[in-house]
Length: 430
Image (tube, rainbow, N blue to C red):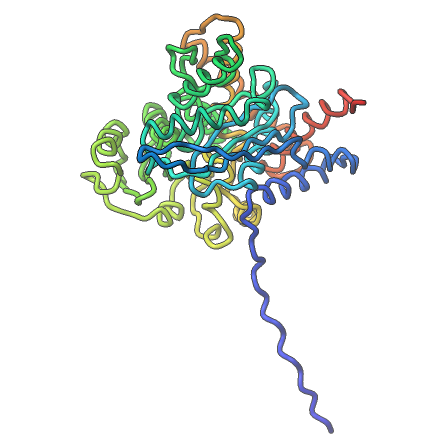
C-alpha cells in the first residue's frame, strides 16, 4: 500500500500591521461605515480629503544659508464648519500622517458636536536643532505659503507636537499683516495677551479627566485611589497627572522620550514637573525606580494613558497591556489590530476622538470669544468643557448600545453619522 505523505500545514503568521496613520483612519472609517450602511458615493466622499496642499518653505538659517523645508496643510472634511486642526513640527512628519490626523479631527469635532470640520498641518523639520529665530522665520514663511487655505471662516490652526502659543502668535501676526487687519480668530491656542482663552493650556487634560470619571462610573471602578500610568509627560501628561492627583487617584508611573519612573506610593506631580524642568527628563527622579516606556505600557494598573505619539500599542504588545481602562490622550496610539486584542481581553478603551477632544473644544470656545470680542472666565470655560465632554461620553454609550458595537466603533459611528448627515443635507454643488 502506497504511503501518503502529507505536506506540513503552514504556520499561521500574525497579520502584518499597516502603521500608516491615513490607512488606519480609513480602516476605522470603513468599519463604522458598514454599521451605518452609507451610500457608496457618500462613503468615498467622506474617506477622501477635500483638499491637500504641499508647499516648499525656504528659510534663511542663522548661518546665512537657505534651507528648503516641506510643509503640508490638509482639509479632510468641512461639511459641519471650517477646518480645525493642529500644526506639528517634527522630523517624521509625512503627508499620510497629516491626512490621517485631519480625518481624526473631522471625527473628533463631530464626536463632541462642535461646528468644525477636520484639518491638520505639518512641517518636516527638527525643532530641537533650530533657534527661535529660525523657527519664527519658518513659521511666517509657511503661513505665506498656505495663506489661501486658512482664515477664521476657512481653517483655524492650533498648537500640536513641538508648536505652542508663541507659534500661534507668529501665525496670527503674519496672517493679520497679509490681510491688512487684526484677525485673532485665525488661530487658537494663542497667548492670553493676544486673545487666547483662559483654561486652554489644561483643556485636553481636563477633558480627559472628565471622560475618565465617566468611564470609571461605567466600569464601576472608583477613581479615588485608582492607579494610573501615563506615557508622555508633556503638557497633557503633566496636567493630567496633577488633575488626577487632586481627585485622590494615584499616578504610579510617568515617562517621557528618555524613559519612565515608577513609585507604588504615587508620584507627586509638582515634584515631577520641577525635576523635569531642571534635568529635561523624569528619569532619575528621587524616590522612584526606573522603567522603560514598554514596561510602563505593560504595567498592572487601573487606567493607562498613552499621551505621546501614535502607534505605541500594536499587535506586538497589546497582549501585555494589563490596565483595566485605556484612555487615549495621544492621537492614534492604538492600532486597529491591537484594539481588537484589547477588546477581546475585556480592556475598555476610550478612543482619542473622544478622550483628547477637550483641547479642540476649548479651541472652539477661544474662537467664539475672539469673534465676539468678549472673554470668558476660567471657571466658565471649565464648566462648559466638562459638560460637553460628559454629554459626548453619554452619546457614545448610547451609540454603543444601539449598534451593539464596542466603544471605539461606537464613537466613530456617532461622529461619522453626524458628518454624513451634514454632507447629505447640504447636498453637492453644482
